[in-house]
Image (cartoon, rainbow, N blue to C red; front, side):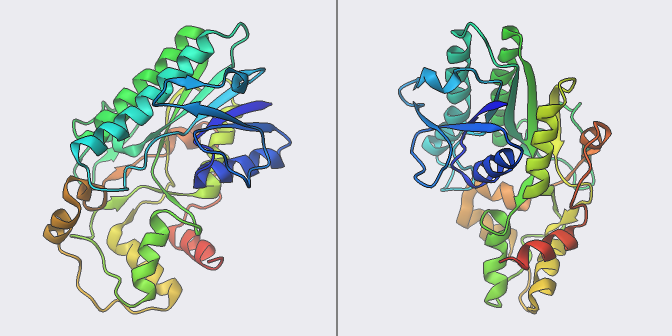
Length: 302
């Protein structure tokens, strides 16, 4: 299977490329910057100039669209929020226009999204794929991103939208950001610590994407989160336990985080439960259901 991946030079993209190669498939990348370590074909695209190398789509069976500016990088100024939105919506639109020109179109589009789609909810609320989008900034970004992805259905393609939670990976991302202060004895839960973190191990994220790619009868939105929820305070304790570090500091006050991060503080201070039942019912079997097991396995490789 020939698969075009956008955003494939990021941490998750690299993980996915490795898994696809292990299956004997043929991934290729569309990227604004070349990855000199990539051992797959690479094609240039430039979102700001609204163009993509059309050769990237030659004989492609599926597209996995991951490209988008990092929401946890930099304060959410108006300029930054515009970049976050446009990097997702415009890139999807560029892909659509490129695919529209093809005589033979790919069968499938798998488009990234996020559990932020559901917006701010009560802590014990459980969100599933049937819910409407929330009204806050990240929710609206996800909704507009998914709306652009849905346009591919008009081209006769199967569209799958993966609403991803926090991906645990020992090589980077959110888990490593939590590990560092705990390693140096200054770790603490954030805010109330009661906010739920919808998480998934990177192996299960790749496994779920490949599962959805292979099952031609599946379409629509799927939550990519582990079945076992965890709160910020519980996760902090799990990491400290695995690392053999004490937690001696009180929780970091929510007010301090709001002052430090501004509107972006909602990423770490807000959270609720997200259901993975639809993915499980589709036939996917998780490798890592237990938070403690996943954290232990990942940090043993750190």
